Every structure is written in structure tokens, then in C-alpha cells.
Image 1: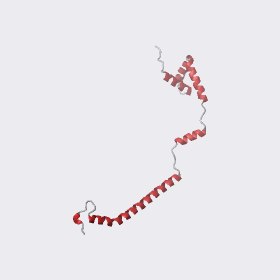
Image 2: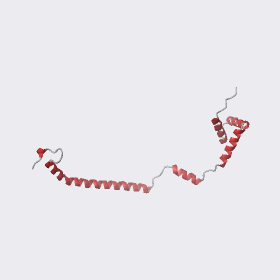
Image 3: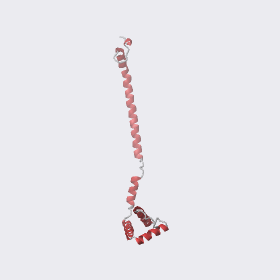
Image 4: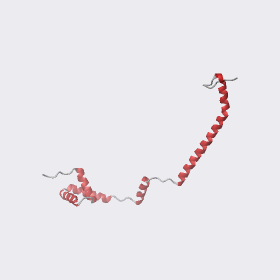
Length: 131
């Protein structure tokens, strides 16, 4: 009974592993025997080996730029100082605006008491109004 032939994908993976030298000796011998018997597979391997030799390695500068793109960003001291200054400015501004609002509310309490006395505010009891 003949051994079942691997699928096309499995054959290509075996050829790629053989090219990279990642196979055990028994597997490598099987691939080499197949290459000796199959001229199409041998052409594929020779073309792949030639194409691999044509690919130039990345220049060091391109590697550094690619690494910088995916590296986590570091916060600069200037950025942190500007962020702290902005938070303080907003906090102080909000505090000042709040204190101005409370002063105007305190000054307006007399007007509110008058409106209650005249019965102009909802919920004001008419019996409490004194003229």
C-alpha cells in the first residue's frame, strides 16, 4: 500500500522548512528524495532560494525608525510641566469663579426674601406675607 501524499500546502511548508534548515535529518532526507524525483518542486526551491538572496536586509536607520513607531511613548518633562500648569490654572480659575458666584448669591438673598414676602415665589405661604 503506497503512502498517502501530503497536501500542496503541507508540501510547500516542508520545502520552506527544508530551505530554512528547520527539519530533522529524516524529514530533510525525505524532502531531498522528493526534490530528486520532482523537477517542479526543485524549480520551486531554486526560485525561492534565489528570491531570498535578492531581498536586501533592512538598513539600520529604517529599523530604528520602525522600532520608534511601535515603542511606547515617553512623556517629556516639558509636557508634564505644561499639564500641571494647565490643571492648576483651571483649578484656580474655577475656585475664583465659584467665590464670585457665592458673593452674588449672598447679595441676592435680600431680593429673594422680598419676593417671598410678596408671594411671588412658588410655594410661598400667603399667610406668612406681612405688609
